[in-house]
Length: 53
Image 1 (cartoon, rainbow, N blue to C red):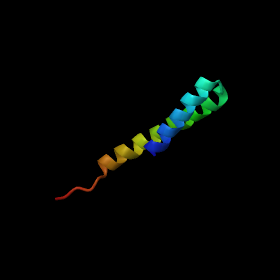
Image 2: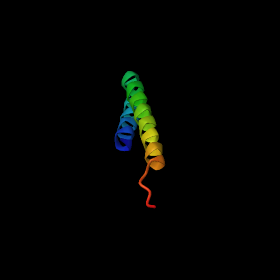
Image 3: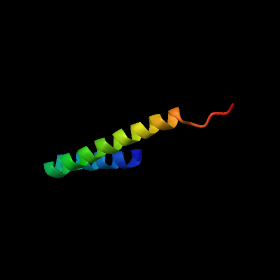
Image 4: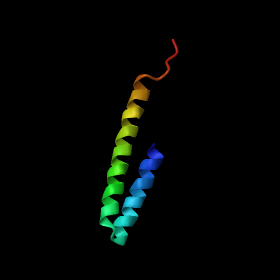
């Protein structure tokens, strides 16, 4: 999931540099959403991780 967030972030940067601001904004918003989902899943995995007793 973090991989796809980075990919969309790079696409947003390239589109912004080349002048495609609509595509850049859309790719940036997708990257932000994927990064937030990654963070939520990471925190859930830390909290509910396997613990040995």
